[in-house]
Image (cartoon, rainbow, N blue to C red; front, side):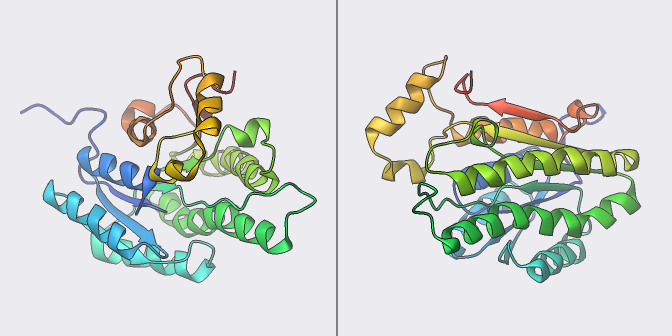
Length: 253
């Protein structure tokens, strides 16, 4: 019998924050297709979360839905504990949950700033803090943080969002240093604009502007992002850590 391939995640348990819709849902399903059991949280999209888990179950993997606010420290701890109890372990963490509350800096409210910081940045800290002791004790683990090219270049009207994504990049590099000696890989991906359902609300002129920025002449699909995440969670990426990988069709350049 042939052994497992390097991208086979059979026997692994993954947590995907914000896994009920959009990029997160594609990541959750792609990890399951690669063999992992997958837990995902939701804050408001319970029906969508259950639909993702149903798809995961249909391909023979275990799925778990947990209602948890990523910005709440205790919710994160409780979710990680529940995943370990019900699915047996935690091997992979994909921090993906995020929001936007766009405004130019002189019009941005304190509430808009705080909400984005608390979900997009503190939310990542909460889950990494919760899985850190587990990964350290088992001497293995994979963490993938979803950042953005706007965390590298900035974006007009998104000072709060860009600040969180830049913070995620710095967090990724720091945690990679701290957990590296425990055989834990920590990387970030930096997508450009991605064709999700949320894109339907964006005027066509803005979407076309993003397309024009790319050198490939197209925007990413959620599956494009998910494919990179699966690679970073597999043994094929075992010697990659502390990196920020742009996946933007050349939009950044």
